[in-house]
Amino acid sequence: MGDRFDEILRSARGVLVSGHVRPDGDCLGSQAALYHLLRALGKDVSVVNPDPLSPRYAFLGEETPFGAYDGARTEGGVPPYDALVVCDVSTLERTGPLAPILRARAAPRLVIDHHVPDSRESWDATYIDEDAPATGLLVWRLARRLGVSLPLPALRGVFVAVVTDTGWFRYSNTTQEALAVAAELVEGGVDAAALYRHLFQQFPAEWPRGVATLLSSLRYRADGRLAVVSADRAALRAAGAPSFDEADEVLDLLRAVGTVEVVLVFREMADGRVKAALRSKGDFDVNRLARAHGGGGHKKAAGFDVPGPFADSVARVEEIVAREVDAWKGAGRG
Ligand SMILES: [Mn+2]
Image 1 (tube, protein in one colour):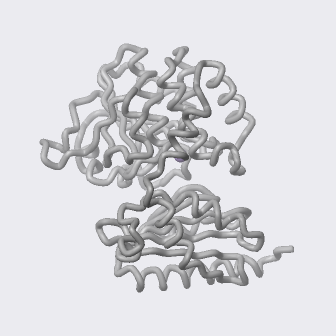
Image 2: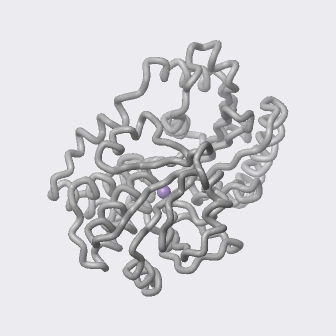
């Protein structure tokens, strides 16, 4: 695996790095690592994402120049390049407004990712490992393979990628490799406590009010095996949390309940679409459910979005998920 991927990357002079809409810690951390890896190989590198950095990840922008799609510029501001590498997502569709621009370019398209791949997408070469805890670890492996010693900003990127996707080494995707690489990153100069503070202790003052709004809507379905919360923009505004955006902690909190196997969080996006995030504690496959609604992810963490209006879509999707969890519970569970 990876021969053709490495060959295309090696021969390209200019590389464009991109990723999914609303890039998260793994997407951005991988990109930071890849940016500095490719720079170490003497390449011209640009990072352009569909969306700018959210405040949570702004600190990464101090070491790596993250660009974002700009509708006011020609072709969204995407520069010329010889090869494209998409990080942490394996369908071009998920690059949002960048998708038609990237698709129209003749340069080879590469993907480096750990999501369940979408067979409908065609890539010139892929580096996909569904069992990898984070895409950032694949960039780490790539650096090893190419014999590149990564500078500190790249090490920080890999660390951010791994800790965000493993829930700071708490989720079941925390492999021996994740822990071993983390140890090497710390040895290489990564300050774990400083990154913890950046990632998990810098939320805006309104953030707890958003969490409270979501939690106050809690209902249990499927005999307590499914926990559902939802909040539309009006509710968040009324609670004094108009720009509430980080709901991962809510997904974690609800999984703390003993009976709960699956968590479902609904939020209304700025464009009126309804975003559904799903987490599973055990064997229930939330990726399959997300796929059926045009989304995707992993077996234990996945998401999708559907058109509004909010209340109608929430009711409809919640019913579907409750039925599935109910049926799964009956399927030979001890
Ligand atoms: Mn990821």
